[in-house]
Each structure stands twice: as C-alpha cells, then as structure tokens.
Length: 180
Image (cartoon, one colour):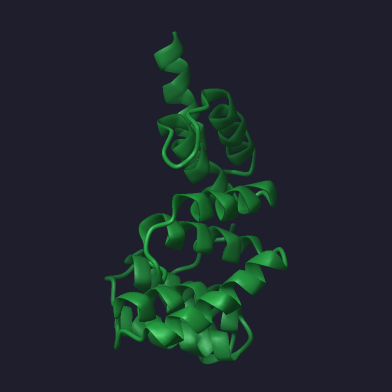
C-alpha cells in the first residue's frame, strides 16, 4: 500500500479525488500523520461518500452512532450501517475491514459485537487485506471473540507478512522467540 503525506492527499482531494478524501478522513479520524479531528474527518468522509466511495459509510455510521464530529443520529447511523453491510457483502475488503473494526470497538448501533467483527475481519483477511489478517491473528492468539488458535494466527500472520505487513513480521519474530 502506498503511503501519502497529508499535504499530498489534500492536494488530490482538492482536485476531487474521492479516494484521497477517504484517506484524509481516516487520517483525521485516527490521528495518523496529523492530529485527530472528528469534524474535519466527517467532512472528508461525507464528501467521499457523496462521490461514490463505500468505505466512508462505515466511519460515518460510527461517527453518527457516537456523536463524533457532530450530532449523534442513530437513525442515520443505522442507514449508513446498512449501506456499509451492502458494500462489504459485495466484496469490498476495505469496507469489510472497517466494518469488522467498528463492530470490534463498538462503533455501531447496538454496540460491540465480536461475532460480527470476526465475520467481517475473516472476509477481509480472505481478500488479502493485511491489516485484517494481522488484527484477526491477534484475536486468534488471545481467543478474543474467536477460539484461541495459534496455528490459525500463524497462518494469518504469514499471509499478512507476505502482503508486506511489518507488524505481522514482527509478531512472527516474537512468536518464534517465545517458542525457542
């Protein structure tokens, strides 16, 4: 995955590149490469979603559910969640991952739901989403919402490392040193 600086993404977003708006929304949502700012994040997500991007729907559902960067609007959150599920069910691995994380962290109407979280993370992992592979592996290592299964965790970490995840490679090294 290519990484961008915030100023590069802002330049692309100002040209109407909706994927750049999505990435900026995530950056401001998570505080990655910039300070977290939910109001700015929400603005980028709304623009990207209006431009046809599916991934922002998950974050907008999360933000509306918890009142992040604006009012809490459960009806809107539920509507956005339905759109997110539709996009995830159509095979969008970025939406599957974001939805899995939203269910894991409780950023959806109804709160935390580990079975739904693991379902969407599994789907994203099967689609070679390396962050989903890595996070799901950590769930399998801890038995967090899934059965404790170190062999499955190792398999997922190996796939994630093969997909370029430095975090997965580090986790594999740590596992190997524990086994030695």
